[in-house]
Length: 132
Image (cartoon, rainbow, N blue to C red; front, side, top):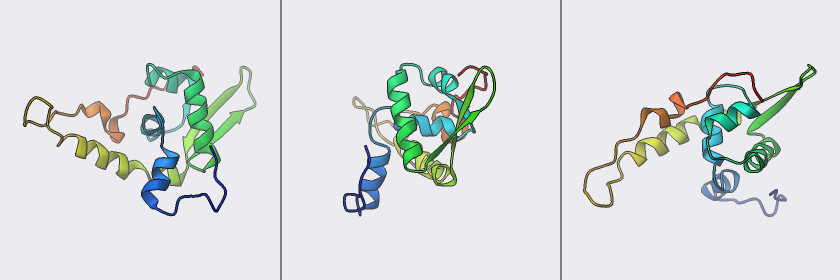
């Protein structure tokens, strides 16, 4: 999905949602906040994501300048995805989302549901294996 200048949302929240819309988008960013990753490593870090969906999210992020894709001239080929400065600027947004989610009460109780430390942008579950 791409937009011409006259279609680009003027509202910052609408623009954010345009870029990070759809399943997995925010979790892909969360994983990449730990540094460059190969496609296979992202697939392992996000159990349940399809290759098609991950490819679409990465292409969208690359189109809008959130992610760079670097192909290395090696055999076997190696491609890494990395957040740009604009993409890395999403860290405080994801941290705020994580903090807010910890305040939401359970449906059957007034108690907030604890958030796993592994959900934080600082401790995402990325791996550094060399598949991809």
